[in-house]
Length: 371
Image (cartoon, rainbow, N blue to C red; front, side, top):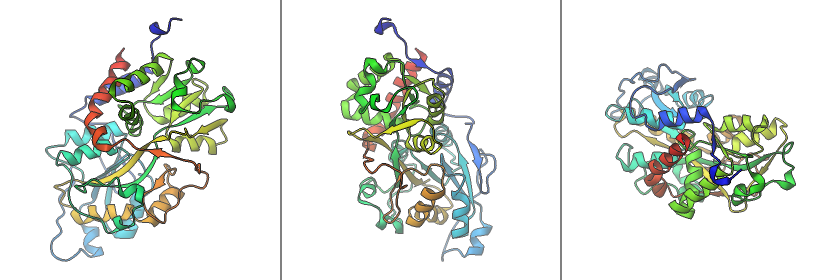
């Protein structure tokens, strides 16, 4: 088949989701309330003011809950926070596009107090647009690793709680022997890997945009587009989210993937026939950060939440018990999973650059989906 005439195999679900969510500026998303003290995501939390001395544990339990928008750890963080601090919390979970669409829709009347997601460029833009509390330093910020401390913006609108590979190369060894698998990102566009590769949609999955942003920043916009054009013309498939990519890989629909690392290690731990490859040039990182809505009435509870998730003991518990447990912690004293590769090299797109180009890059991928 003529390579120029080959169209990228974009899943129908990706097309529907990415084109609808990308332009969602108002209306209900499909975010769902999660775990501790949650109800309908669209309900506005009542105000809870804090004046004078710090609230007692009894005062904390009587106030309206802290509303946290997040895309992971909703299965564990609520009870942990409530038990440790006495504050009540309502978690609203969704994928990256859903959460950011909801925040945009609520811009004039925010329903959230804290946002905590592995979407640093998007949250960086919230800070630049004046939607986040500025200029405060959590007590536990003093314990950030050197890697994490460098990611704190000058205006101190958010703090990193960890970073994971937004994509590692993973091969289905039943379909492709490990010694034949690609070793670098540039290998994926080679003819021998035609119709084998899958990845998540940058317009939908929170980690997928930081993944592609690194390539675009490294190569420049034109060369970045050329790389992904080559990849798509080589038959790469794009799926809505990383779990969809993992399912396609184990089901034999694809033989290779750029897959978020927790999903990759989950397959490995399930004894699936897969091999994880960390490219020598590094794996683009998705950094999980947390920021506070600037007009929140729950300032004390919001600050307590961010200090809590910067605590090394808390990060260790997320690593030991959380579903998205494969990540590099931001707190000194917390230790990554023992089976995480010793040579796990993360590279990070500059959040300022990535936030400035986010709409353009996501639109480019959305246009590819339509075609």
